[in-house]
Image (cartoon, rainbow over all chains, first blue to last red; front, side, top):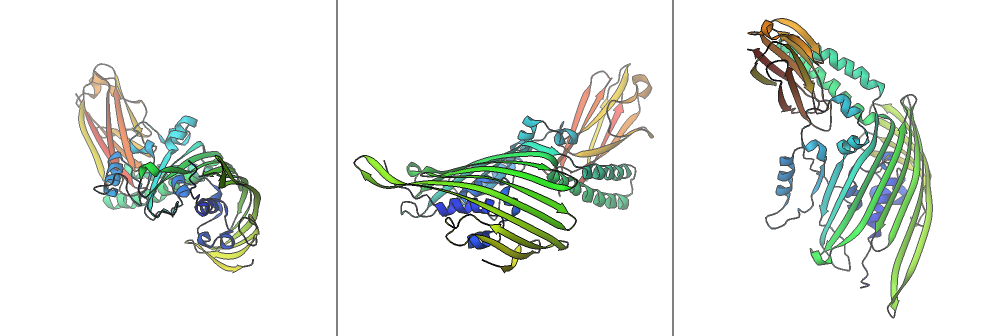
Length: 363
Length: 113
């Protein structure tokens, strides 16, 4: 059967754009301008959401099997098995207790244990499926997984915090005074949160892999359901502690029905020095699309289009005050063929910690 | 918040030792007293408590504080392992912190008989 099914390229491209168009969205696609950042070159935390093209406002993150079951049951209606507009992220390893896993074992995990400990599954459903085959409505499901093959190693700041924690814990153990206990507990919390933050600032080699798939069921009809897209990400980075330099390479691939293939290969260098951050990134993108346009006898005819493009951008960020940054971005975006307009990236903006506000842009 | 364990441990003629394990990738420390005398602190691994006959009738108290330093879970737990008595025994206590980064105090007493 040669039934032609709309590909929804805007959604796929949106997903990729949100991943890769770091700071060029203002010029490329108005919808994503304030959502993207340099970190978007990294593997997405929830690949299912990316592939589905949704940004759920409330993501369930249950930490116990009971909480997971309750979340699922409360999201489903009395008649529906599949919850609607539901998004959940689960780390299966941490659903149960690990009473013999010490802090050092956690931090120095080998590859199999790192994969287990960092495995994160994401699942999302959406009712807002666009018209496919000119049929409105339906349900889209997305499922994704992400894990760390290499988690990196602890930086020296962790050792300092650990010593501080040990000293406060020792004081707490030796006092029975309630007021002092309360004070020490508060100080311990500050240090503990600092240690938690260091887990995201590991140095050395970090290798992340992720994959996701999305399926669409037009008119809520199972028999008409089909796999609409697949995606895969591999991100390798090496982070130096001093000077603070981060080298990152990314390879990602997305396939969308019926025959759109998008492959990105790129890299980024990120340098932090005092209040100034310098970054540069390059992404090479290959897009191929096959479109069936007709039939001659039993043979389908169509168009095959292949497009290669690259993005090259640099960014300078200066921290004016705590959580206030001025950002200058300059470079070349994909296109102009793919974006239909100019491909210059040039923007001066200020970031208040809750989103970037452009001050000046040139096209 | 404190989590408590009160139990007895049957000694024999040999040396009794204690190990305290902090799990779930969290960080903790302990203070161990035999009666009122401090016999160990910090990380407790195979801590000699005393020969069975010498500690019979005495109480071992262990105060442990565990901080939630692992952002993957809010679970904390402490495992106590006593060896050298009639039979080795393991005890596990578990609690979940209310807020990220909180600490929990565990108190265990073992009466030797």
